[in-house]
Length: 188
Image 1 (tube, helix red, strand yellow):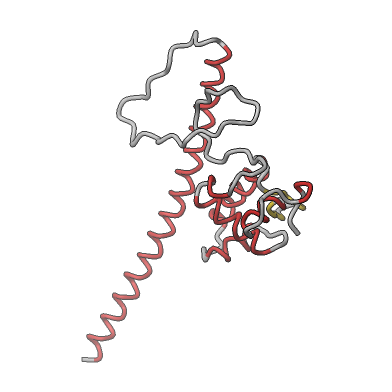
Image 2 (cartoon, one colour):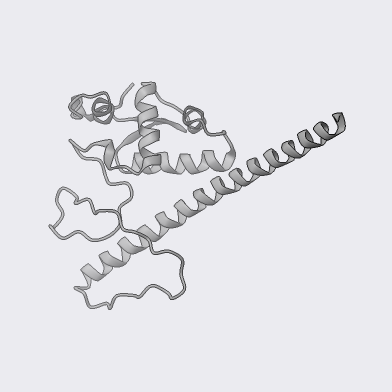
């Protein structure tokens, strides 16, 4: 009877190991998928900008046949000084006064909320740990790219190499304030 239980325990351990390996592969694929979706988003915006500049003289480019699922466009966010017709996909809109973190995709919103709760600069590995995600190189680099995008779009600041924090108005908004913090400084 003991050898049967030992064999079951061995098989269970093997299945658990394979499950963990599959989860790691899925996380890597999700990171790659997000990077490709971001790249597609930038290409779509670039093409639409060129079409706008050329006055619609360029015919639309049809999507190649046989591609996977179509990319669902996110509701466009109109920049402050933009014309009323804005086309394109914006996954992380530029921050402006009064804007809530609710407009961010979930992964970005999670990172922003963790940084706001921390009240100080954090590294990508620390944010991953707070998310409950294993601190692996691929995941850390994927998150670092998201954090840099948040900095580029005005949601966060990079206090030093690899040290990220949300700006004060975003932290205020998440804390239930007005979202219009004093001077738009950096939360500390």
